[in-house]
Image 1 (cartoon, helix red, strand yellow):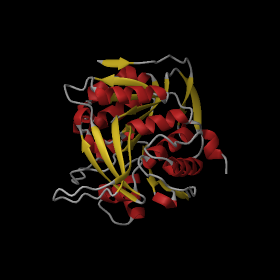
Image 2 (cartoon, rainbow, N blue to C red):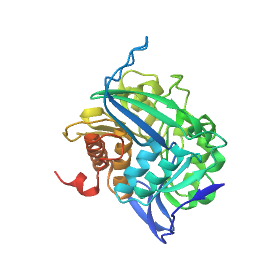
Image 3 (spheres, one colour):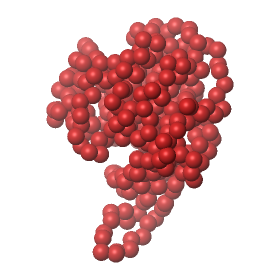
Length: 327
């Protein structure tokens, strides 16, 4: 069963029909995000572990909202989208933190039974230009395809799924979920994130039903099995989706049948890059669901990703629409 907190039905929204045309539909959410929601314990300072009982000193430690899906959902809400998040969250201290922070950020949590697991947790070892992550999956792995019901799909304009490789139960049936979503008139997007096992099992059957695939450069190379990002993107585009790649400080690149473009990020003083790719996703989805063309949407994405790095954690410095359109 799904626990719905704070949802109020809005009678009309607009759903993309084809590349640029919009049509009026019944919808409660502009975007339904499905995936992981957990706290991130964000550590900065001397974070590269040395064993042998060595004690190291940190400069900062923050317990913040984490999970690619949760951060993407928060970014979407910050950009004015009516946002629902389907995630498994436990009845424990960490679960309470997740619920409270999502509520404060304007995201409607559609909480699924965690099947007895504790709420997941990620420890982020953050350096100025890189990070390492240690994750306890817990409830992150509890979602199943059946949790994404037809009733939920009927409540949204767009379906976004995050952290595929942390959710093998969901991944096994995601192609069918995306196919159902598209039959119901939703557009779909996917951000697999990194595969901790580095097996990079094929997602071709999912991409057949995916409108937008949102990897970073290393994920794109690994999933396509090609070192050159242009060749990798072309291979995936041939299977169906538009590919929108997070390109770090360089911004964003996109490929679709017959076209490609890129967009720069915005120069900022970087505090922490955690969740920047998820804020990037939110910027792209907000732009596209607002009717902007891909070239404009990747500009939104690149700027949203850049601006999110101005503070510790994935949500503290997420962009508003005014932030993105202001020079």
